[in-house]
Length: 307
Image 1 (spheres, helix red, strand yellow):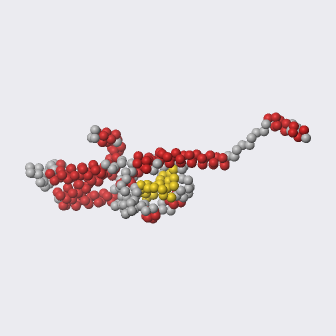
Image 2 (cartoon, rainbow, N blue to C red; image 1 turned 180 degrees about the vertical axis):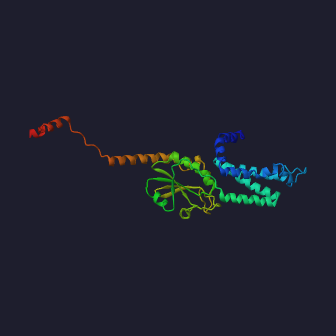
Image 3 (cartoon, rainbow, N blue to C red; image 1 turned 135 degrees about the vertical axis):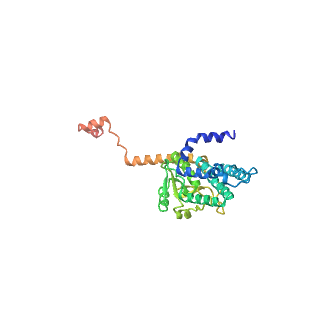
């Protein structure tokens, strides 16, 4: 059962994974991930490679290479336990496969190792993973607009993501955050994002470190009345981020999104009724039919006749 669950999950997401792998970034990553395997197994190339096997077969892995590949598999499995999207699973596989390829190529030949490492650096500098381009109800802030927008309406609740485009975790979380905005966005509950990799002043102002070693990216902060109420991940006294999984279930539970959404909808409804009342005043009551007929004939009301 433990093996069937990941298999069914992979088959369920297979069309989506296939679509991702057709993008240039993933095609290049796939080729670089299997580079050592291709070199070691391709006839005509592997015949000229060094090998530590007892049988002298240079077209098969030796015991040290098998050990490195098994260690790679263990690292990927441990890392993927915290992955929340299929993109993150695939990204971890590609990342650690490249690291293993660097080690294997250097062990095989220093020149091949330097060549592969150079290719990895060029790839890292020129190729970026594709950004999420799906539907969302998210407002993007700059360093000049964020404070004004948060304080614009004291009754509005904001959930703001602090992110950086270079962070793989932020890129993987983008689709999850977009889905939440589609489900819970309303007039009283709004979703925002700010790129602290671009706006360093925002990073300092709200104490969210943009360093790759801080593990504070992404950070979700809940604002009510322009003031911070809570954030995830939390930061301890030493400034270190407490480990937290950015799954949709965790965010809904920790931020009480269902309750916030219901209360925000009531606030929006009351606000709409007040606006309607101010724009469309109540219509005056109509006169009684008998009274209206008497006025039309020029007769005085009975109360005046008696007098």
